[in-house]
Figure 1 (tube, rainbow, N blue to C red):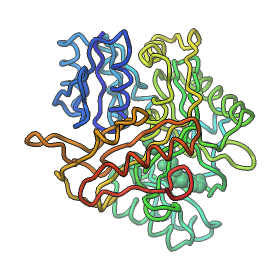
Figure 2 (cartoon, rainbow, N blue to C red; figure 1 turned 90 degrees about the vertical axis):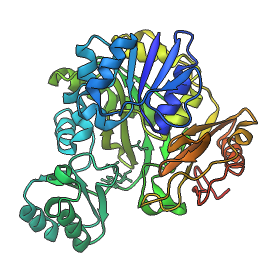
Figure 3 (cartoon, rainbow, N blue to C red; figure 1 turned 30 degrees about the vertical axis):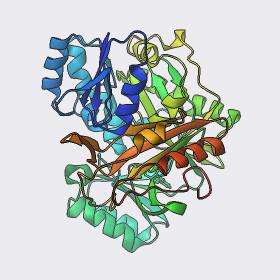
Length: 421
Ligand code: AMP
Ligand code: GLY
C-alpha cells in the first residue's frame, strides 16, 4: 500500500518514520515533507493546504491511505475531500474538526455532553467583553475562538492585561477572524498532560500519556511556543486518573459525536489539566500533537498502519496494540529568536553522531536541503528523541545526542522532563 502523510513538521516526520516500518507499506509520500524524509519515504512538492491538488495527485498515484497532520488542513475540510474521492483518510471531517478550530463550539459540545471543562463565557461584542472583564475574578484566561498558531491564549493576572488581550484580538484583529469571538474562562490550577486517543466514530483507543513543555524557557519562563519538548509517560496520571479520563472525557466524547452526528475518524488529543477535582479539558486538538507524536511513536511497538486503518474502518474495538514500557523524551532544538523571528538556511551538523547509539532518532521539523547541504528552515528545527528504561535514562541519552548537533544559534530547553541536564 502507498501512504500519503500531509504536513511538513516533526509530527509528520515521526508518522512517516513509523508508517514506513509497516510490512503493509510499499511507499510513503510526505507532502510537502521536510529535509528529514528518508527512503523509502519521498517528498512531494504540494502545499498541505492545496487540497484539490493533493486529492488529484493521490488519485493518480493510487494512494491507499491519507494521514492528515495539521489542524488547518482538517479545518479546511481535507478529510471530506479525500473521502468523497473514495480515498481512506485519517482525520475528522470539517464539521467535527470544528472541535479544534472553534473553541466556543468545543465548549458548547463539552457542556452538552457532560465533559469537564473550565467555566467560561463567550463574547462576540468587545464592549460586553470589557464590561465583564472589569468585574471578573483574576487570574483568568482569554482565548481567541479560532486557530491562532498556538498564540491565541493569554493568561491575564489583571484587568489591564485581559483588556489588552481582548483589544488585540477583537478590535485590532491580530488573528483576523479567529479573534472576533473570544472565550474568557476561569484559570485552573493543576498539572497539565497530553492525552491521545484514536477515535473511529463509535469507540476510542487510548495511547500512553505524555507531557509537553510549551514555554520557551527553562522553568516554564517566557512566551508560549508550539512545544519545546515532550516526555512519555507524563508522570501526572496514575491508573485511577486514566480510568476517569476514559470515562469522563473519552466515553462522553464518543457518545457526543454520535448524538450530534459528527463523523470523526482520527486522533483526538485533549489538552488536560489534572486538578484536585479530576481531569478538566483545556482544549480539544483533532490531530496528533507535535512534539507528542515523536515520543508516542517511539513507544509504539505495534504496526501503526493497522491502527490507522482500523480507525478509518470503524474497527478499533478489534485491535489492542502494544506500547513499550520504556520511557521516551524528545528535546526540540530551535533557531535563535524562536518563537519570534529567526534566520533560516544555516547548516546543520552532527545528526549521524547523535543517532549513532541506536536509542536516539532525530526527527526533522524545520529543515531543508540546499545545494546538497542540510540547513535550517523553521523555528523548531529538530526533535531529538531517545528511549530508555527510565525517564532519567531517556533524558540522559537525548541530551547526550543533542550535544552532538550544531547549527548557528541553536538552543533547547535543558529541563525537559526534570532538572537541568
Ligand atoms: P490551549 O491552547 O487552550 O491549550 O492553551 C495553551 C496553554 O494555556 C495551555 O497549555 C495551558 O498552559 C494554558 N491554559 C489554557 N487554558 C487554561 C485554563 N483555563 N487555566 C489555566 N491555564 C490554561
Ligand atoms: N504540542 C502541542 C500541540 O501539538 O498542540
